[in-house]
Amino acid sequence: MRKYKISEIVVKRLPLYLRCLTYLDKMGVPTISSHELGHKLGIKPSQIRKDLAYFGEFGKQGIGYDVSYLRGEIRHILGLTEHIKVAVVGAGKLGQALSDYILLKREDFDIAAVFDRDPAKIGMEVGGVKVSPIENLKEIIQEKEIQMAIVTVPANAAQKVVNLLVDAGVRGILSFAPIAVTVPEGVRFYNVDFTMELQSLAYYLTGQGKNEY
Image (cartoon, rainbow, N blue to C red; front, side, top):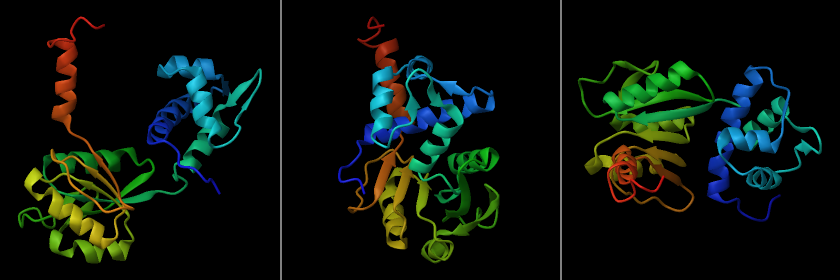
């Protein structure tokens, strides 16, 4: 068993490698070198080799990486050997769009439950499942053994929803609510804020960083 933690930065690069390898595999590319992979991703070859070395030896000198094999190994490392059940809290436009996208992709994740507090949304179909009242969240999540959730509720409801999810046993949360929330140790929480990302882009396009290309 590994006695040290892998950096989160390394973990977040693994899906980039997986996406590229999946495309190459579909295109019938048998092998790829770290230099070729790095060129496609804009990542230094030495960084790719270092990242992968945390998990084992996958390449062969003079040949590179077997695309199909490495793709399978990264899927295993990420825990994607089986589809993962996901709950969505918030059946508004964003929640509906994300749920339908995951349903359409049908890759790695399944929408297992969708919750909302609006009576008008209860019973409507989102992401292939019917929306349930948030009052039933704990019962349904525990019954379906869901450990991952997406939160698309307003900022003022985010902490309460996250608390409900944690209490129900969810251990991985991706939130689109534009606010920081707290979670206990043992729960992994990621926040996505579109406005902040656009503001960062603005710095390089119209702000003081526009000449930094």
